[in-house]
Image 1: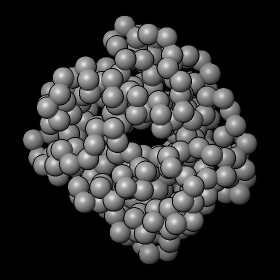
Image 2: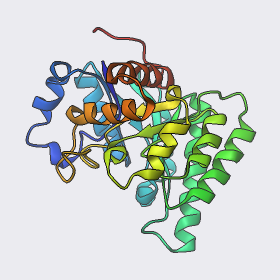
Image 3: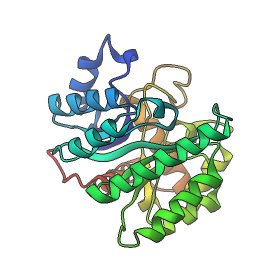
Length: 265
């Protein structure tokens, strides 16, 4: 079944029909969803959703644009809750330079990124990386991390991948997965299409980032896991395989990365 490796169902955009959507996943062919935190508060909500729904798992972490909410107390909470049986990742964490141009803010982002990476290594969980307009510093930090922890063969995923095919190839060589979402269906997504062509499908995770980034023909609408078939269809088309094969492989990839055993089908 389809695996949505990155969603935000705690978002207020789902307040009116969250129960209906999450309860109807299997009828729509969606077998598993990882709900991803971006603050301490949304990480708590992700765990609550994972406790409520059998097929939902949680990632906990603090997004680079939300580091103002992070503290030593917050880091200790992340450490403690990482032991929860349905917490499968630390994330989303990383760097976002699109809005933050101030050098001091960027340095703080880098510091909290490194600290959350180190936490993930200590608690033995993969990470979900958010990186926007920050390729050079992201790669610098991930190379450092790889050098410090060569024993980690499954470091995590760079979600909503937006950089070059060459950077993707280097990430894959270090053990990272590449998250591919709705952008791959856009007409101007030449760079991402080339990336999907060049890397092995065994390193690709399918994701929505819902409620954001809906694929064509739903672009501009609220996104949900129900639209994942459009993303898988495009990945399959690029790779020259059947959509069902793309679904099977990306599900296996996500289960392998998150350490989630095959559930009921």
